[in-house]
Length: 173
Image 1 (cartoon, rainbow, N blue to C red):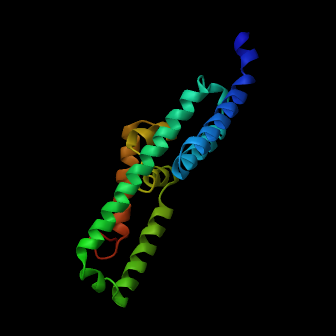
Image 2: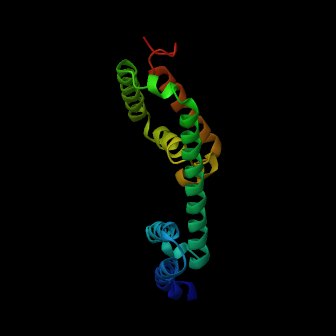
Image 3: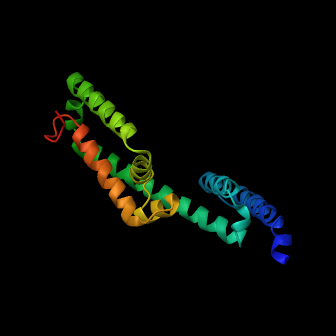
């Protein structure tokens, strides 16, 4: 019975923890940390069952930590691309060839259409992995399936996308 009495307080505790985190983010940290705190609060307050969160402060800190790590990984990938572009030097001039640009646009349209044509669960697993950078385990938790199922979905998506690309030798007639 005491669990039922404390349940209405749980969402309020989560909201209070969010307010505290946001205030600390404004007072002590830079813009990036403030953004992370806001994103963490948006995710936490968007939970379907906020009463399931036993320790709101610890939960928010874990979400913020994960967002920080995701941001760092994204920046590292972006810097790797920038370094590669810097290393190509004169090769970048060749990339502006109008025929290559048109071919690239057509290839992109083919891939996007192929992604859109994937079965819903397969498309969800693929986009979470390729576009949001989530691991198979994280996708499995989010989708409520086993990691092996996620692996099968992504393999199926990769196969269908490879077949959709013109000039790969794997395209369907």
